[in-house]
Amino acid sequence: VPNTTTNTPDLITAIVVTDPQSNGEPTGTVDFSYDGTPLGSAPVVNGQAQLTATLSGVGAHAIEGRYSGDVTFLPSHSQTEVLVTGPATTTTLTAPTTAALNSLVTLRATTTSTAGNPTGSIQFRDQSGVLGTVPLNGGVATLTISNLSAGPHTVVAVYSGDANFSGSISIVESITITAGDFQLGTSQNNVTIAPGQSARFTVTVTPSAGFSGTVNFSCQAPAGDVCTLDPPSVNTGAGPASTVVTVTIPVGAAGINGIGFLFMGLMLIGAGILRHSNITGRARGFKLAWAARILATAALLIPLAGCGGYSNRMQPAPHTSSIIVTARSGNISHNTTLSVTVR
Image 1 (cartoon, helix red, strand yellow):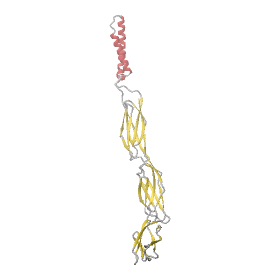
Image 2 (spheres, rainbow, N blue to C red; image 1 turned 90 degrees about the vertical axis):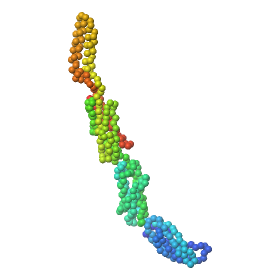
Image 3 (tube, rainbow, N blue to C red; image 1 turned 180 degrees about the horizontal axis):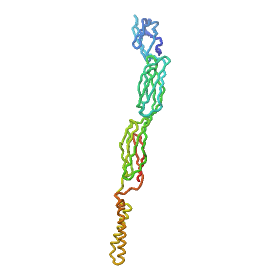
């Protein structure tokens, strides 16, 4: 039986072969069946039985011929396989060339034939395996997925055929899945404060290219300065998310300012003169007079020393502190720099 096209009449021939030492020609009939279903019977003439039948069902099928035997020859049977093909089909696939990680990707396959409307299903595949199987509806099958991994994907649509139409495969389409990312933004980049005060900055994470996940923050401040984060991590599943960075510039250790140093110096000088004023006469009176003048000047500086001349803290010199804020999620990391000016 030659391979044939579905729903096309074909001639099926069975040859009854006898032993070379046997005499005579076999007679009787041959019963034909198609996958176990009877097709009909034909008489054996000149060692052959022929039956015209229309085979259906695309794919491989078994045809069996059973010889009934006659008064001289015993019954026998044989089976062979026939491939039944259907009208040709064409399957096309449309897919985006790029997509963001975790975003929806729609694959659309269309199967057509000049002989009618194919039925059945489409299997979508990439290099990792089967992505999904979708029934044809009016010759179209659509699959929407969001689980493609980052990187390149080669996608095809496979139509396996149905009872009447042959299968077909689309050309390969390439899709590149890009990993998501995020950007950092700040409410302000520089704040001016006095020593002992705190500056607050709002740092916002804005997802892009389909990024969604947890972002962890850290901050690095110069020695002596303090930075804190509230909260230390955010989730961008619902969109942009923010943290508040608080930077504190502490006041320095206890000390004396310029007026305080002058006050103490004058006190020491006056005390030194008094200590060495044990001489007599005019020189002693002269030294005592100078000592009195110096101590009087020192006394005039007492109010100034008390109002800041002798401070309880050393005021740091004006300067700018740079604080580095790092946002990290997996292998993605971004930095931003905040500046605090102390005056």
